[in-house]
Structures are given as structure tokens and as C-alpha cells.
Image 1 (cartoon, rainbow, N blue to C red):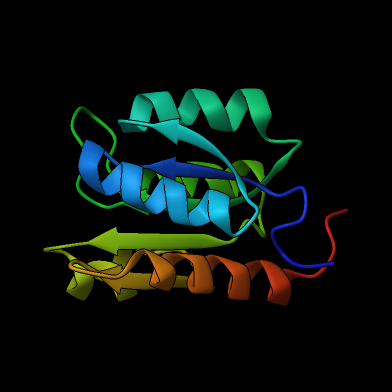
Image 2 (tube, rainbow, N blue to C red):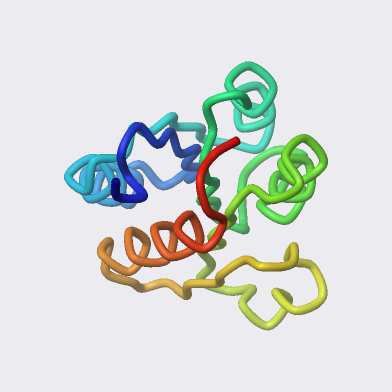
Length: 130
């Protein structure tokens, strides 16, 4: 069974064009995608759908009070081994100090396939969902 089989991902991105491209690539790879435009919406999805969530992909720079670093920390408080992929155009140097362990940072610009490979790799490394 592949990583994508029956896998729900939370994708947090405020730029709609990027969101559409990545969402399409993830869906083509077999993932189900829950979308959030900001950190607060992401927190709601984390709370409501955490039993089914297999991974988080988040932009670092988000509008509102919570950034991608905050979203990932909250996700890990709920699910301590949740795979996390960060995406950033301006904050990759902060990943070592602000990122959660066992995560991947992808810098903008990127190809949507890079996101698919990164999250699939982390999910496969995490093993079967318990």
C-alpha cells in the first residue's frame, strides 16, 4: 500500500494559485487534502480531523496570528509523530531553530512534485497509521 492510500493531509497556504497547483498534485498522487488559508483555520482542521490526519504541509508565512511554525508545533502537540513539510520563500534559515524535529523544508519556488515526494517520504518513514 502506498503512502497516499487513504491518507488525509492538511495543506495550509494563503496564496490560492500555489494552493491549487499543490492540491492538484497531491490529489493526483492519491491523497485527500483538507485546505486552510491561515493558521486559525488550520488549527480547526487539526482539532476536528486529527484521527484521520496523516501529514501537514504548511507555508511558514501566513496571515493572522499563527504562522506555519505555530501550526506545526500545535499539530505535534496533538500528534507527536505527524509528518510535517514546511514551505517558505523567505524563512528557510529559521527551520533549524523553529521547525519541529523530523520535518522537511522546501524553498519557494518549487515544483509541486517536490511536495508530493517530501510528504510521501515522511509518511513512509513514520510507518503504518496506528
